[in-house]
Structures are given as C-alpha cells and as structure tokens.
Amino acid sequence: MNDSSLVPDEALPLGFRFAAVKAGIKPSGNADFAVAVADVSASAAAMFTGNRVVAAPIIVGRKHLARSAGHVRVVAVNAGNANCATGQIGIVACQRVCSAAAETFQCEGHEVFPSSTGIIGVPLPAEKPIAALPEVAASLGATPGHFAQFARAIMTTDTRPKVACASLKLDGRLVRIAGVCKGAGMIHPQLVPHATMLVYLFTDAAIEPSGLDTLLRQSAEVSFNRISIDGDTSTNDTVLLLASGASSVQVDSTNTSFLGALTEVCTSLAKQIVEDGEGVTHVVELRIEGAATDRDALTVAKAIAHSPLVKTAWAGCDPNWGRLMAAAGYSGATIDPERINIWFGEQQICKNGGRVANFDEAAAHAYLKQREFIVRLDLGIGNGKCRFWTTDLTAEYVRINADYST
Image (cartoon, rainbow, N blue to C red; front, side):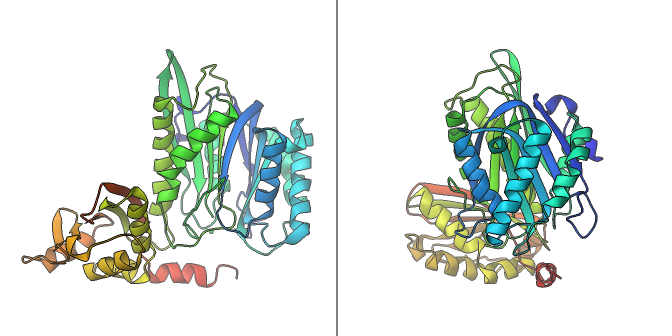
C-alpha cells in the first residue's frame, strides 16, 4: 500500500490542509515538521499526559486553548526533539514557532497548537521549523497524499505511519472523521484534562468545543487509555480533536452515532500503536471479566500488562499462567483467588484458582506462538469488565532503548 492510499480521498474531512517538510531536526534527515491548517478557526478539544513533568508545547498548548476558548487554526508538530526539560528556553522556543506560524497563516498566536516528540532534555532549535514555514505554506494540500506525509513526518521509532478514518450519514449528509498518530515506545497513556503518543483527530462536523471535549473524553477512555507497551507515561502525550464545521452538520455531545464513529477511529489508532510497539513479537488483548467494578477490571489489566515477568513469558510463548494470578493478586483490586478462571483463547488454563485437570501445555504453548492472541480472566466476583491491549517485552526493545539518545 502506498502512502496516498492510507486514507481514501472521500474519507478526508473537509476544511483542513496538511503539509510536511524536512526542517533538519531529525538526525536522519527525514521529514520532521508536520503542519495542519484549518481553513477557518476550528473547534478544539485536547487531552494531555498525566505525567507531572510536561514538555514546553503542552504548557503553551494548554494556555493557547484557554485563551482561544477552544479554537485552533494551525497545528504545528516537530519530531526529533521533545522540547521537554528545557526550562524557560524551551517555552520561548515553542512560542517563537507559534508566533511565526501565526504570521505565516494569518491567525492569532494563541490559535496555533504546538506539539513535539523526540529526545528529552535538548533545547529545540526553533530557527529550523521557523525557516521551514515558507515551504510548508507552499506545499499545503487536502489530498490523501498530504495527509500521509503529515502522518509520516511525526514518526520517531515508529516503523510505519498510523491513520484511521470513518464516515457516517447524519441528517442525510456525510460527516467524515480521520485520525493520525505516532507512538511505538514509552506508551502507557494516562490522559487527563490529561518515544510519546501524539494523536490528531479531524472531523468536518460542526461541534462546539464543550461538546467536542465530552466526546473526546468518552472515546479516549476506552481506546488510548486502554493500551500499554512498556508502562512508561510520556511527558508529551497529546490527543487533539478538531472540528471544522465544513460539512454544516451540527453535532452535540449526545450524538451516539458520531461517538461510535469517533471511538472506532480512536480504537483503531490505539491498536496500531500497540501493534507497532518497539521490538514487539506478540500483541495481546486482555479481557478482564467478573470484577467488582470496571475500575477494578482495569486495575487488574494494568498490573498484568506492566509485569515484566508476564511480558517476558509472552515473549517466550511460555504459558506461565501463575504469573497472571500473581499480578492480579498484587494489583490492589478486590479478588478471591479461588474464583479466578483463566483462558488462553478458547483453552481454559485455570479453574477456580488452580490448574485445570486436563491442562494441555503443548497446545497452550502453540497458541501463544501466534503474533496476536487473547488472554481472558474471569475474577468471578461481579459484573466489572474491560478490554486492554498490550505487548510482550523482548531483547529488541532493550536494544532500541539502550542507545536511544546516542
């Protein structure tokens, strides 16, 4: 599949243009500065990392959204430098890029939304993206190829661009949603009015910022907040949703059809991040059932997903279900060990807290050799449940991250 076919032409939301150029930030020399421009000021909602150490673009972006009352004209994303832990110098660099972008695209400085991804602790060379802005302006376009270029330019350790789209009919007219994201490592988003996860979602529906915020939170909770690769929460995690209104279809926060389509896009992007995890050889869907509450189910899922012992067992296709029991036990959720049942796919491994009498270790080992598999735990206590996507932990992950900065 070539880049221009990642999103069909008819699937791109109206009212946005995209571009990506080589600003000279990435040592590789690849495209590293991606920009999206709304034809008119778009409604916006965003969620950011739960990490208390936050990057300069998040500090600036929050202030801009507050000052603009939830409206954005320009999204400016640089890759290759996180602009985090850079102090006031980093804030000033970010503001300089925003001011230059505002001048280039004839909008207010607070209508520019900045993002950065890459190595932490290195000052952002603001002069590089600023110098690239004329080329950005000259190359803007509203084609799938332009959108794909945006997706590719924000990549760091990603092996492929990640996009998703959906469309639906509302009031007899077509409404489009398209999203792009990056992320392959340092992935355990904890989004609150929340290499990094960056997500940019675009729709041509007409939605007020407050309604957009409600819709984004609902969709992110069951998608981006349900994935983990390594348990590390980035300093730069950002999810931004923009609504251009170009379809003239009015949508509010109670529209379940739109929420369903948005959640579909978010879930696709979240799973693509997991599938492209650094060094990953197995993608695991955890299905936790029978918990006292949904929150308890999520607590158990995270304990399992973040356990090095569990993740390394998956890397070796080792059906060591005892590690799952141990993780559930220390998770902090309410459990009764004698009620726990565990399945690898359709094969039950554990019954009422103990190994099943007819446990077929060879069959379980063969099942775990698949790149994708399902692990289901029924805690046998209540009706709480959740789905969560995670990965194994391999020597390749260690290799990638052992020399990331050098």
